[in-house]
Length: 294
Image 1 (cartoon, rainbow, N blue to C red):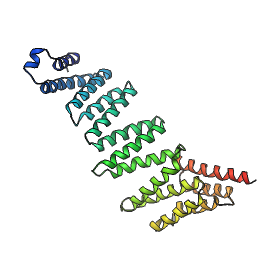
Image 2 (image 1 turned 60 degrees about the horizontal axis):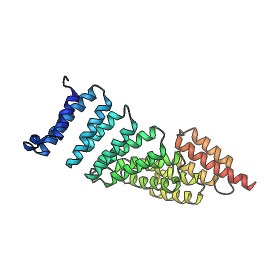
Image 3 (image 1 turned 30 degrees about the horizontal axis):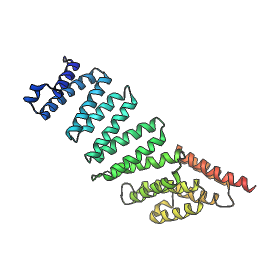
Image 4 (image 1 turned 45 degrees about the horizontal axis):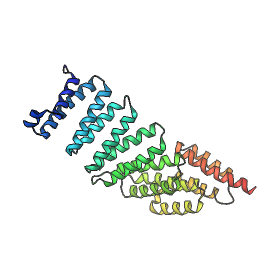
């Protein structure tokens, strides 16, 4: 592109701040539309030339103008700005993503708001900022729930992220929130033929949460309930492990038995970070109480 983007921005600003005759022979709306077109052209050129700072600033200016106009697509320009800032300034990137979400909220575009919040949460998770990632995943799930379109799967994805991250990081609300999420989604999966088999994983996680908490009563009650809801769960390796571990955390505690059950399970099932943390927490709880007895 041979055009000078700085000159295009200058022309746009002249449109937005015209002299007496400029105002006399054109309407404010038409001047703003012309300015937006000029700014768009400039922003695209900056982007092609990888001038990320000016590209981000120009897209942000376009978005602010569109917000003033009452546009319902300003969030797209904020996302464009965020993409440019992602190369040079993470704070400005996140600021523009938050503006994009705010724009979506005002115009009732909850699916888009949810997707942007999910994007932010994913990046926070990658950067190991788990506390803020959990909050953003929660917010994303709320947006997906508000949307009238078929967004249940997206909502479930975000809620599972909330529960899993809580358990992996020993979040203060892990035992009050995570088990409820696993049960809720597990029950939802049971009603969908293609997802029914995945319900077992949710029920396994719910019961293991209570085992980690050393709440053998709730763990046993829930396991029996899930076996009634899904009889095919009974004859699985996961179910057999849960039954054995519930016995191990019931007084008198069986620390060695717990370790053997987990080791045996490990030979047939891969232990991910989530399972390792929950097994470790449960073992720590019964070892501590076992020492107290001695």
